[in-house]
Length: 225
Image (tube, rainbow, N blue to C red; front, side, top):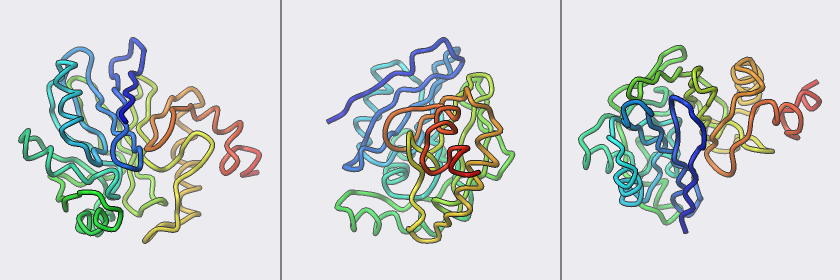
């Protein structure tokens, strides 16, 4: 069951949000509105479906961007990269152990996944491009040790993977997860970007950092004070 959702704005970068895999993981296709060039963000599975969405919307695939190395986010990255002959960028190299074990992760959950080696590891302070748009790379460990997020200053939009959700935060009970690192990533890396930043998360609906600072039971200003 796929419900695709379009980010409805006049922004320089837009996203088609497509849940994939049994985990209903959001696999956004972000695209530059000037060039129609696009990036597949966290393609965890259902490669044919994602390729079809790009084609139906006349998008020009340019690259794959990964926030972290869990199978529901990266399981189809190698497949799409090889079909389209495009490069994979991200996450941070601390997630190499996860990308090296994608196939076995997938087998545990009954889903297909292929081990993955990105063309480029990303560091805090790097930037990536999608068409004419620039996304800042921010290192946000905690859910995994090599998690990154992608932030568009011009569009006030962040792709946050599994760092934070509407009303919740990422799990830290998986290999090399760290709860305090996650709280620090949210409060010290995300909140300074501004309350009005909209974020697309790995599961569930979009929200804004301001909404979460007001109401998220784990990381609201009240919860952290």
